[in-house]
Length: 130
Image (cartoon, rainbow, N blue to C red):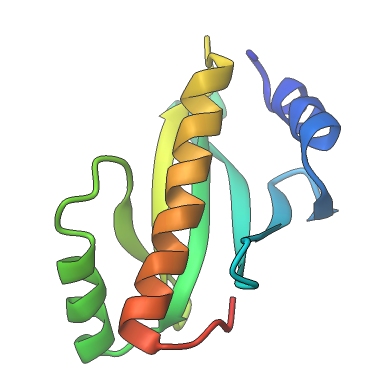
């Protein structure tokens, strides 16, 4: 995959896309235990728009100082990703450069971000809102 449009085509062929536009792909994942998790794949740019990156982001729960601290602690040993926020929502995210992106460099982080966000949501918030 070398462009945003290449990645979008790959995602459409391999996943159920809920919604997409020129900047974002929204997907939902279900787990065997009945839980579900949203994930957003964002097109990001650096260097005045000449360098494309892809951010995989999944919501975890409401942003409060206590919740952020608990999610950061829960993510202490995460190999992939980091804690962020989007508006009033704590998220777990990972970003990779799009140029020369191999399939495994997208798929494995996608799996880890989605699974980790769901685990953190369960641990810290006790529910399944996302």
